[in-house]
Image (cartoon, rainbow, N blue to C red; front, top):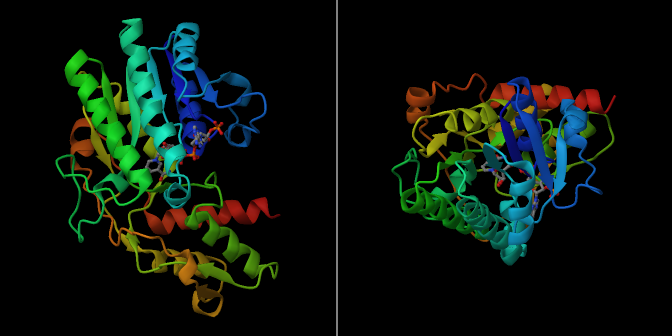
Length: 320
Ligand code: NAP
């Protein structure tokens, strides 16, 4: 039985990945900064809580990282932990850098220290590309990060690439574009839009305040994206992959689709609030996942419209 260690298992991707790996017959151990107090609601929602082992690990603490590697002896590590909000990274740049960059470096160092053939998946991000003016990003596209989050993810990406080359560690980064699900916290604008549309339709909320709705993004379905992570570690050679649906839409379209799904016209219920604009923004995010299609056989089934429908349905069910 293969053993997987999933850092940040309490998050959206961690929960879906735990389900996928258990279905594939893995023994799964997941980390949280404090597994004793973390509510781990996402594991309850996907039904994996009782089947995963849990460990408290602070990725920015090398001893803590090394200890869990000795204890679990994983074949594969999926590094999903870290401060994951672009907006929050402008408020907490040091915490963001620490949890993402130092966390990844500690994992790489710990793998090197054990001398074992442990494979590492690193959660990189399309935010690393910055604004490409509409050009589709591939694995060859240069990084021009535009937020503390993206700077940290870019540094972690290059650290992974360096350890792969320097020490022949099987380590790769998935450069994932946005992926959503009912497990997304409301801190993210997508879930804020979905939940607000549902509450407004039920008369429980008056209006929705939004920032820049002209931005364009590629939104996929999170359960499909964790399948790509798994496939990256099953390759003969470690490589980085862009993961995207290939369809870019305006945030305004996302809003319109969500409100239409609950029978409302978004223009009558939303207000633009300049305070919600970011100091620096990526106007267009576009990805080309041809390499993943060719080498991983990965092709997404769901695009923005279906993702919104599934999120609205889940939110409506949760609200009763
Ligand atoms: P998520 O729901 O925010 O989960 C990340 C987990 O990391 C949290 O559950 C939390 O676990 C831990 N964490 C949060 N803040 C931390 C901090 N300051 N220090 C250390 N750990 C912290 O994120 P996700 O959406 O599942 O994404 C998984 C990974 O993929 C993240 O690294 C994210 O940046 C990256 N990514 C996500 C997307 C996307 O669209 N979802 C796109 C590209 C890349 P505990 O509280 O239990 O410790």
